[in-house]
Length: 274
DNA sequence: ATAGGCGCCTGCTGGC
DNA sequence: TGCCAGCAGGCGCCTA
Image 1: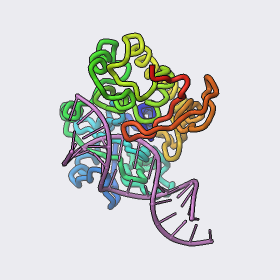
Image 2: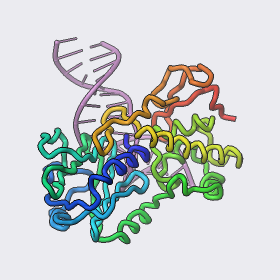
Image 3: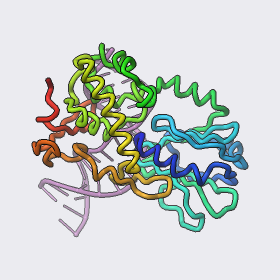
Image 4: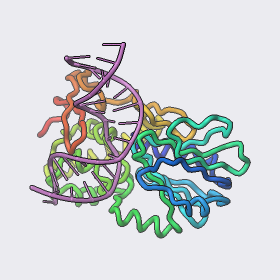
């Protein structure tokens, strides 16, 4: 499930392969992604040179000089640079041929929860994020911002962390891992946190995300980086997917509950309600 | 304000 | 052995 660390890894992997390269040709599969590809986009993209590739939350931003390609990997999206002679895998939906024809940028998405869209300039990309209420990057969210987000809310912490309008980039894995790191019960309400606990949570999120980026993200099933290589952070999970396994801190079996409609993993001893 | 449910989509797993 | 329900969870949308 590509979350911030996975998307960051993809962007870092792709950057040296893409920047300064020309997108010569675009091929599109018949199956639609969350948003269907407009034929006009192919015409606008063909011949463009990639000025930069970056990330905002879980969104990948491909600056093509004037137009911007904005990509979301959904649940099973893969955005990779591969040798053009390699046969495309099933569920490959977009193929961009790079200038020399030796290498292709491919978008593959088994479940097609991903989306790709084109904006005519940087300002329209920004408008899109503003319209969606996309929150700040986790390291941009300071103590005052967290206070404003948490102090009055009756939502539980799990729901708050998953809300992209609060902070951008956290999904189910890193929400659970951050709450374990902060020793906070995921069902606690935002308004129940003391200033000290708010700060603990804020720092835990940043720490967990940085550790995950250093390990190139988590590969449970489908995720791979921009170079096609799997991540390693799944070997570091403390609670996510560890139901019944001993807590790494106190050996109490990890429990699974459902919060905010998502499976939620926590240690009942280390992460108490109080 | 917030919770809960549905739909989108495929592949894997576990129970019978 | 084969079949099918259930699950995984990103986001957007709807209703209560």
